Length: 125
Image (cartoon, rainbow, N blue to C red; front, side, top):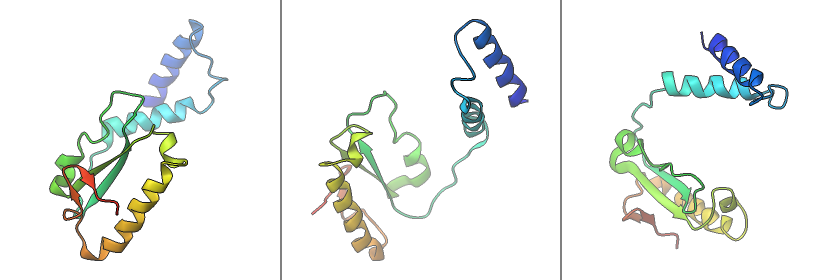
C-alpha cells in the first residue's frame, strides 16, 4: 500500500535527520498524487487542436512537449515564450500570452490551428 511505503520512507528520512515531516505537512499528499500519476494515469487521444505555451528559459531539463505528440499528433502545436516559467505570467511577457489567447478565441470557430501555427511557432499578429 502506498501509504505504508511513504510512511516508512519518510520515517527513515526523519530518523536520519534528512527530513522533518512537520516542516512539510502536505508532502505525503503530494507524494501520493505523484505516485498515482506515474502508476495509473494514461492519457487518452483528444480530437482537437492544442496549443502548448511554454517558457524558453525552463529551470529544468525536462522537455514539456514529450508525449503530447503521440497523443495529439498533428493537432499539437508548441509556442515558446521568451521568459522563465514563473516570469511568463508577468509583465512584459504576459502581453504576448494575452495576444495568443485572444487570437485563439477569434480563430476557434475554424476548429484548427495549423494554418496559424507553422514550424512550431504561432503567428501572434
